[in-house]
Image (tube, rainbow over all chains, first blue to last red; front, side, top):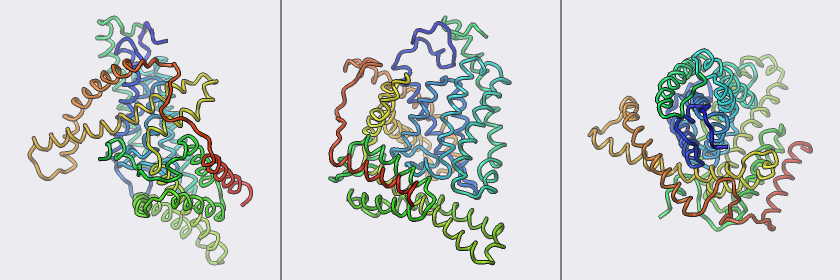
Amino acid sequence: MYAQTRARTLADLAGGATWMREVVLVVGTSIAIGAVAQLEIRLPWTPVPVTLQPLAVFIAGAALGSRRAAAAIAAYLLQGAVGLPVFAGGASGVAHLLGPSGGYLFGFLPAAFAIGFLAERGWDRSPVRAFAAMCVGSSLLFVCGLLQLAVYIPRDQLLAAGLYPFVVGDLLKMAAAAALLPAAWKLLGRTGAALGVGDRVG
Amino acid sequence: MTPTYLSLGRFLPRQSPLHRLDAGVKLVSVVLLATAAVWSRSLLAQACVASLLLLGFAAARLPASVLLRALRGAAWLLLFVAAANLLWAVVVRSLEWASGVGAVQHASDLALLLTRLFNLVLLSVLFTATTVPVDVAEGLARVLRPLERLRLPVHDLGMLLVLSLSFVPIFFEEARHLTAAHRVKMGRVRWGWRDRMRAVVPLVVPLFLSVVRRGDELAVALDARCFRPGRPRTSLVRARIGVLEVTSLSASAAVLVAALWLL
């Protein structure tokens, strides 16, 4: 299962995968997602904070692949649930997960999984397809987020509080991820090929 | 001195039945009560959940300041939910308010939302203050074990969660040391957000290196303890089902059933 001959995701380029390497990748990613959350911007009319987390989740999903990315998000959510200050602005706790903005946290899970699933099928190799994969992930994220937000605020304010403020920022994040990932493939694919573990599918 | 991995979380060591309660069972109880709090649409049911939780809070012998601090942390959410709903009421429902019926209905809706949030905060505090993080990961892996039938790698996932929980505080500590060192080198007293942003870059590389180094150490440590991925592990904390566990489960299940179908 660990003996893969060709790289399917960026993380596979790191060479022969051992259990320990997977653990370091997953745990490191979960910590990175928590670290990114520390820098938040609060908009006065919505309980949902603006962070760079979606960008980190998109990149993690594509770079790690579906299973590892999902495990990293699961680890991140658990860290927050047991009280480590990894949610936006150093918050933590079950209340945060089940509160108005918790849906966006749960949404990271399907988003990262979907992007990883698509990346394993080569969608992160070209900017256009990478962007399409990000769109899929992002919509899953917003569906989850809005569903849970709807429990707490009136329906007609839902989109104003949970979607519109984030569209432009998320498009930028998606574009950044869509530009970074194929570039990383170009860069690492070449060195990876030199090491004999690179991608030859293209 | 409290070890770092305890002091970073919200765990408060006490001698209480809630602290002794099996982590897996506690997790299931939390899920049941959270479902009751989120789904129930009656104030009476929320009051039921709140009273059970307050009972637990008293049994856990936690100081009230813990709850107050958590509520202050959630003040933003509480305020926002109240403001959003009030605004909606004033703008959209102002006609119904004239009749008086709408006002009463709306006040109860708002009370429901606020008690729901209060219950979630209370639940969250109670859970994190009485449970050691690593026990939660072990408990979660135990609770999810039936999913192994679906070929989900629950065992590996459990180990991963345990490792990640013990890793996070180490990294927080490491990052703190690195930023402190950086600040000393910069020799500046006041730190604006721009300085913070700029300080991120010199933080990333040493932190990354320390991840790799810790990973190596961990690999050696796991090897020395004969750990093999995918193989069953024994655990220091044994699952137990006693009077305490049965009481907790049945109380929370009863509240859930009452909240969803009776009240």
